Image 1 (spheres, rainbow, N blue to C red):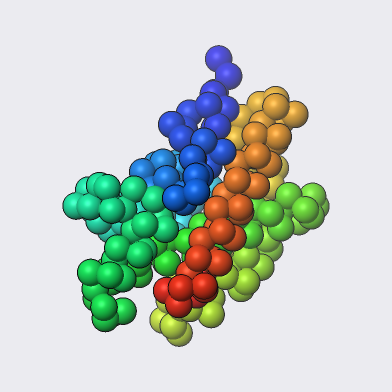
Image 2: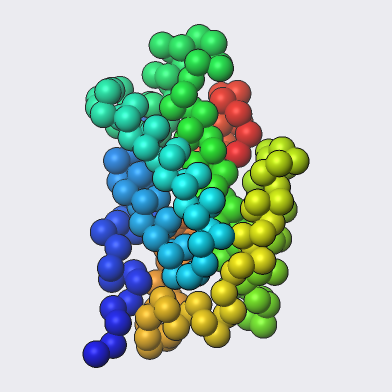
Amino acid sequence: MAQPQFFQTISKSFVDVPITEAGVDTAAFLEASENLVKIFTLFGNPAFSVVQNDLNGNITKVRNYLLANPVEADTLEKLLAHDKATHPKQKERVATDALMWLLRGLKFTAMGLRFNQTNQTEELSVSFTKGYEGSLKKFHGMLVRPVFGLAMKACPYRATFYPKLGEPQEEVLPQLEAWLSALEAIVAREAKVFADNSYGEI
């Protein structure tokens, strides 16, 4: 019996995250982000637990803020504005900091997969190293960089990874593209929100 396609096993894709004039739906975004973390289990290497733990930790912090402020934080934009209004000092904004790091992690993942989709002969370790250098690396200190560098080297081969997303590939790859494009759009949107309001850099 063939294993189900990855995108059929997740409960929420970034394609399904509602975006309105008020912003990106927080609950749906967090659910889609949780499902993104699952893609690293397909990498089949414990070295990637550092990436998964980082993403999951920040998802939890943002969700806790949403649970405490269900109306005021129901979109990412409203959450950020509310956190700023109730915590004038930037260092006290736990939810904003967690969302910033979560978006940085999502950007890293999106860049790694995009590089790999654009360069069909490139191995994942090369693509994700480029993704790391273009996203998280500049925000990481000298102690964290080697840990993430080790994880990049632990990426599976293309020939191992893509079949794990499911078969047939001609069905799975368009779903990956739609998911990835929706993720990239949300990250780009929120990066602008952060920059425009001096919340931080994504």
